[in-house]
Length: 587
Ligand code: ARG
Image (tube, rainbow, N blue to C red):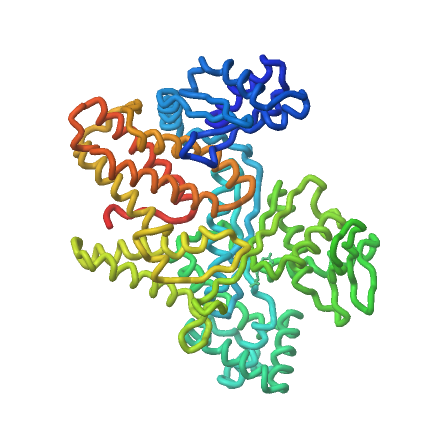
């Protein structure tokens, strides 16, 4: 559907043109003085310079022309040359009726099934999943859903960090703890056990212990490096341990991500592309893409117009080892072979920004992707505690995701039990759904690049700009609809305007959906969707407090209100799904 604001704009454009002025001056925007008008056009001021006359004269002429348009109620020229617009509520109601008939509420898809890779999550195998990975999972899941909604064939890949030093650390520590395991007996000729020599609890203990030890014990660190090297060279016993680490860790990761309602299409990792790395780098050298520098192999990615120094992308270290960037380049080769994506979106901590600039440029220079392929990196800020420092547990440790979810779910549970109208079991269930909204909305409502303070009390509050407030509003609307329909067949209802100012404001907010979504898609900015639904929820609550809905005696008025509510809750439903959470039946 044409955007509502574009319809208004076209009316003003026609007027500018028929008065002999360029239509480029006819831009309409939402009014920044809602007390005066709903929309405005300030183009007469700029036009006055070109046509060398008073802006108010131009504004006055334009206003005369649009007076009869069915889309406007009142259009006024105001000194020095503003055009203040109030829209016609019947035409607006019509527009919202059209939206209600469309599955996407009037949003037009901008992609036609092009493939798009969303690289998010990025957990490191064998290390516990902590809040540091939470943002990537939450933001990435939302971005993937937004891209799907926009018409892309979006594919989410968790891209595990499963090939680094942490593996060597685990192996070295395991050898100290259980030296009798066959993996550590060089003469062992039999089959390695199918059963992993540890469970997830033990594995979660092994890595932090090993990491701590490696910082104070040089010998141990050397052992870990040796083990990593042996593993990466294909040493069979360590490959067998690595497979156990993978199986135990990935099963746990799957459980954790699923608790977050985060679903990946692909569970690939750095290890998957290791076999193609030597050939890739050799080929880059042979083609003169990579060259030697201080013993390492690098690709120059700096450009003349760079405003800052962009160092070369190192693809092979002096000792022959591959690096993070090498893995990422090989992964792009793999993705090109399998999917030929039109676009790649990576979601990581913003401290990796330079890494991605280098990788994206190197991929183009090396011809791994074609010129049209789009790359984007969404770098996010840190989740801080109330003290402004990265969020930690009370004793200063890294907060585990499971614990974090539990804390927020408990906070919501207590709130629900305060006015105990539901069974304990239902309250637990509801608390999980609402807790997730608190966590996700608390994150997504901030611009991703910014750091934010993780404030459980605020995020879990049923009032203010929070996930629970949005859900509470939806539950309220659904309960009105349930009472009205009372289990009967859902009849098609039409929205008509009944003269209430709050109804008009609510329709105006609803009508902005496709416009907002377009921006959200273009900028991959979930926080703008949050701001929008907060606004829509507020408009609904104003309407709700002002207007008697179910007690309305005029049946046709009541039907019209119900029809509007149906569309508002449908928009909210679509929006929270794009943000990655859902609403409970009751709260
Ligand atoms: N495992 C990495 C980390 O924990 C994130 C991976 C992001 N994705 C990528 N293709 N580099 O920092």
